[in-house]
Image 1 (cartoon, helix red, strand yellow):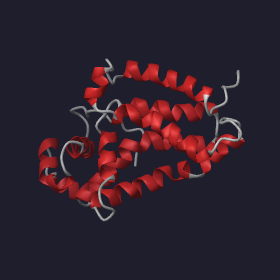
Image 2: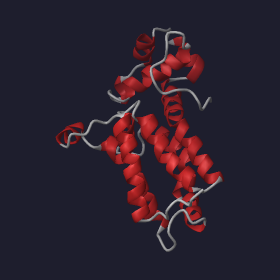
Image 3: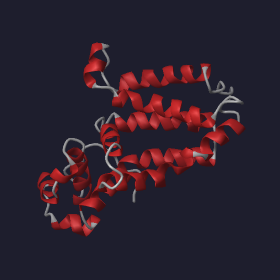
Length: 214
């Protein structure tokens, strides 16, 4: 899997594989999984449906690959944070999430919806598989390391810090658009750049130590 593939709309020169991933993401975020057929994905992509079998095996394989490639930039940052638990890598994970999700703002809602499905549901099984592979370090090791390396304040509960951090990252994309509109918020790159700086101040006043002067 190539981790630096862009999430946005493929160009006309982009290959069939990328077209299929892009249009699968578009469809899965607005339609029920069982309503999205491989024929429909192929039709939207302008390719033969046989290419789904060739590249991904089946619809489940395409769905899993779509998840992994959309989340690949965050996985890269999680790996960097695991290798070096620094202020920069800790904040760059949030920055990367904002930067990537503003391109596909419906994607976090897809995650939310799928994780509310029964555990036996195909979508949920695939989602949990991908999340376990990508964020297993987030569950335990990373936030303990962030405290031991002085990124987070001593005495803070790593589990609660993790919940606060994830909440700050995810909420802008989970808030109903109508609620954001009431508050005059447009979910775009400029707003998210302001929000990350605000979140840094918020976290520094709460559970994160100030960044050291370099």
